[in-house]
Length: 425
Image 1 (tube, one colour):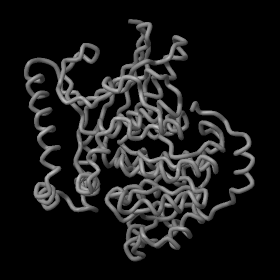
Image 2: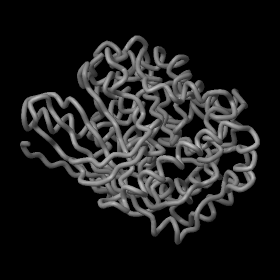
Image 3: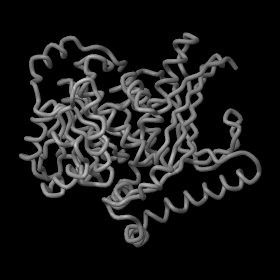
Image 4: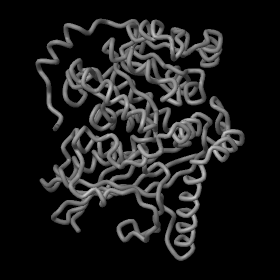
């Protein structure tokens, strides 16, 4: 399943693809993260070498017009596309007019399926910010084969979940091969985060738990291609207890995004052939010393009890009442003061190590996610000839398998830190 150029598909797609009205259509532009993507495009669309033809899309023309007006002169040439998430004919029209669709309209299991189907029908590339692995599993089952045949890139997980994990791991596999001529056998990551929660993110989590998808969500290999599972699956289980890690020299606890990010990295590992024995795991970094150990233990117990509690209907209902509504989120000041840091360590069978760090200022679930998903869409819109696998490579992909080095460079140019170091053990 290694990534390969598909010359026959390239030829077929070159004749099929036609000039679209818009380079990028931002779907869900009136939501909390959607408004931020509109502001990002208004600021950056004229600095891409050529003006980017873009549009705001959603179900309310009046709200879209208000968002466009709030973005100032940078959005003066942006179009407006009205399309309800269940209106198939409107979504078909949207996909016909777009080279790339960027969606922030979650929960995606409720509002994303028909949009993805329209993109696949019309050969329109697609990115989103979902963390809903059961929904993406469904999209793989429905659309991967057709998108692969047509060279259409459907790339979910292009926000904080799961670009740092997925691109960071990919960077280490490349560095290990380049520096030592060996495959990277394992990667582990530790996260430090400062940020808030928006209503759309919580709505997605509650929808997964409320629709009986908890068992699928817990499957470590949910996103792997059919039949691709390791011989020893026990080594890939989600961590449930803290530990004092020698490599990171810190106490690490289970990371609440681990059950999302690890599945994405494992799909990349299968699509890009990292190796049959490749392992990936990630954690939340707490700190060093006895107090950090106690905090890690307390946090781990709290996470386990919270996850169990949210499987209960009355608890989910209470959480929904107390949390921000979809379309709401942290204040501008809070988002500006947020940050994240992801440190990764890769190891080879011969004991060589490679290190990576991905970091940025700004709330990871909002500011950083906006940057990541917008730059992902611009990769597809403006850098087609440089993308991994050539123009014919398609399917339901991951950020690493679908965007690779192009995304790395765009994020660096946008101010995000992506560093790699090597040393022998």
